[in-house]
Length: 319
Image (cartoon, rainbow, N blue to C red; front, side, top):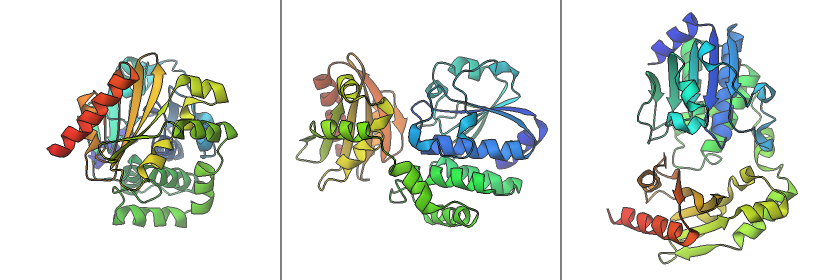
């Protein structure tokens, strides 16, 4: 499949690059790395994301070129859909993006059913950034500092700073090569994790007050409401990483953050320490992800939503 993607890249001129809503480091780092690869080959490239770039990722080289409105999707020769397990996750422009003739999907989510005519999916890879590094090597493209920084950020964030179960020897080998080419681990980690606005910390304090446990302490959860976000002047994206505080608690096997999107509509992010497959839990509610990290959305009052998730996690353990 790598050969086929290289062939398409070499034979086409204009490219659209996009990823899922609720952007994370892997999505953004992968998009921007691919942007620099293609631009270095003299290609015309547009990166479109429905959501704006979170503040802590604006340091990534090239982030200023990303657009949040899509003018003429069918005019592109090729669209790359990165870090995305289904076309709908692009957001409101999914149907227009899907109308582009050639679609290439590069992803590592286990829930990906293969929605593009050209798909490079490796569920064993730590991140989409890791897969893109293989593409770069296949193409024999020069690994510039800008590409290295973006790919390192992609791998760093999707491995949870290299301590999630998706971190393998290849992950460290690639990270080492990226450091050699200009990715500064200290600086990148500082920019991603240590530039939190005060409102994010205020929001975290309120959210941690909602901490509760189920199933004899094996399930830990927190809840964030729209009112909390409004009260402290935060943004919804500030909740990224909150669920990891819950997962860090001794005895917790599955951590959940319930995020209120609208009245009686919640988005759940689930994290597992590995014994329970949370992708199967999310899949039950139309979501997806990985064995240890997944997400889904459920309509209903908060008590009903919590009960549904807790029962699903417990049932998953029994299988």
